Amino acid sequence: MEEKKVVLDRRKRLALNIVFMALCGVSGVFIKHLINPVSNVITGALHIPGGVSTAVSLMFLVIAAGVTKQKWCAGTIGLVQGFTALSLGMVGSMGAFLPLSYIIPGVVVDLVMLIPDKGGFSAFLKAFFANILASLSAAIFANFMVFHLPGIVLMVYLIVAALSGAICGLLATVIINKINGFLEEKE
Image (cartoon, rainbow, N blue to C red; front, side):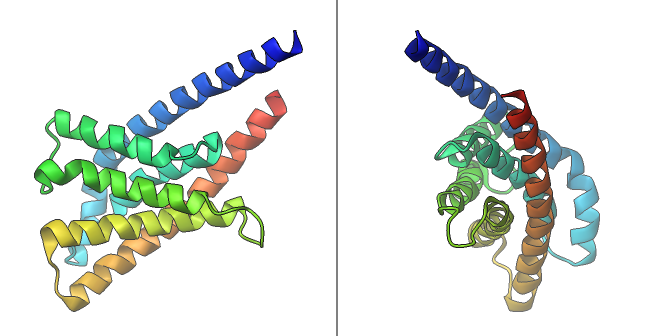
């Protein structure tokens, strides 16, 4: 009887994880398009193509990975986001390569989240650095595929991506801790 309960608990947890991953994926795409006009004011003043709204969008991949603790969670969500955006015609300047602009940062998040919590590298630091590195990977990929920015402008673009990634990484850690605390109370 106890074994059957454990199997049901695992199935229930997996179903909840899948629903949470889907919500994070949809939220990431929605929020990115919602705040894009505001972030364009910031990046337009700096004469760079972007980097702020992407960090906010990537925060949801970090949150999903931090809450579900599923391996390759962020990459999977990135894959679904990329092909969903492509199928909805939101190709932007990437064209057919749009899914890669979602998948690559997702894989970066997953790789950081695979680091063991031992040795002082806590879940807090993993979420923080995952968002920074994912934002940088998205910026580097966008520059490689589309922008081809010259030296100084590229550096400003990468600094803005890293700073916005850091801010969103801090926010992600707060949200992860709140959700995980709530889930622990319920168990």
